[in-house]
Image (cartoon, rainbow, N blue to C red; front, side):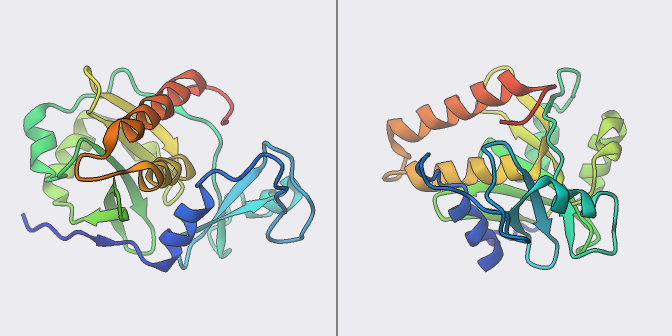
Length: 211
């Protein structure tokens, strides 16, 4: 299977810059109507360029289950998938070069896209659908994910591995964290502390409201 790794483009870069944490005192505003937002607010995915934007509740509900609109509302729930099964040969067949990745059904591309974090941002890997369908057949929950806005987030750094049904903005937040804190060839101790903290937080909110 051929591997193609590339930067996800300007839209993804803007997304990553969004998720490098801003100072708490910096206010955020709805990018559609301009109203000031609270700490817990909705996100929308702009489908054409994969950009994530902040939105107030009245604006965000306009894009629920409306495939003809340019935006799609990102859900808020995170679900740990304790019964998810993926053995080492299946993981190796996907040819992901690191032990962190997320998989999302891209409606524009018409296929499942695999991405993984790197010091340069989100990298995309070609995905052999034959191998992927074998994984889906063992884990039918994958067919329930909302296209574009929900991802399977895989963490095989930990033992045992962890699998999450995750809103796409969490995946980009992880990529942004790694991009911000990576130092040198191995990343340095700080980036691994941040990765550990990210998954601690994700486990804490699994099954509940998004942080």
